[in-house]
Image (cartoon, rainbow, N blue to C red):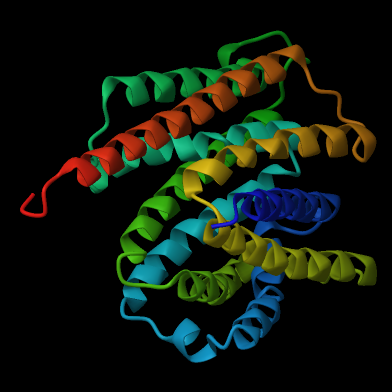
Amino acid sequence: MRPLRGIAFKLGSVLIFILMSALVKTTSDRVPGGEAVFFRSFFAIPVIVAWLALRGELRTGFYTANPMGHVWRGFAGTMAMGLGFAGLAYLPFPEVTAIGYAAPLLTVVFAAMFLGENVRLFRISMVLMGLVGVLIVIWPRLTILQGGVPGEGSHAEAFGAVIVLTGAVFAALAQVFIRKLVATEKTATIVFWFSVTATCLSLFTIPFGWVWPTPREAITLIAAGLMGGVGQILLTSAYREADASLVAPFDYASMIFALAIGWFVFQEMPTSTMLTGAVLIIVAGIMIIWRERRLGLERARQRKAMTPQG
């Protein structure tokens, strides 16, 4: 294990994914989310294949013992990606990032529901706190639905908040499917087949209004796809080099990057309400990770203390 290298890879992946989303946002006024998913997934495949070839893992990377597991993971992940990309057309960049933080919180809930994981009071309370933060972030966008003052929200913004939050639900479901897949599949296999599955599934959105991209849009979307492949490799490498509990909190560095890009590139001013909600979500997420790390260390100490007979 090389923790500093793992942290560096993690931060690199976070930055790459944020830049990728920013590229997609520049095209979101005209290019539908499903079409953006196609470019993001299809052009990530050559990068991932080249990486597998360099590691000598092409054969093992393609082999899967659970093809339907990849289909379900691909469906949930594709929905999450497509809804997240679509939401970029309606909401400020940092806001989409903050709402997306609901995914790891919901993963805790779904893991308890579908995987039978034991969720204690501490994690439940942190999940509730995080979801309150999500509600704070999206509430100004939903005021129009509550008969609020005109100007505080719009139907388009309310729609954007709903689809981004729905995307976070699908992202959490995708994590549940991944937890099942890791029991039989290698990480490289999961990464490769997700890109393939997402590429295929995105084609089903053609009847819903794909457009012929301009040369500039095409270059932007291809760059986003290539960056997505690089980001996935860096993310995978991060978890090879360091414990998940160590590198996972650095996911929240994406908010810093999102605020900077939103401010300097899209001229989007963060509101105090959005920042308050984001802080609650981030604190809840970090506390859950910290608690899991503590429990993991306790379990490791208990195993060491056990006799060989158990």
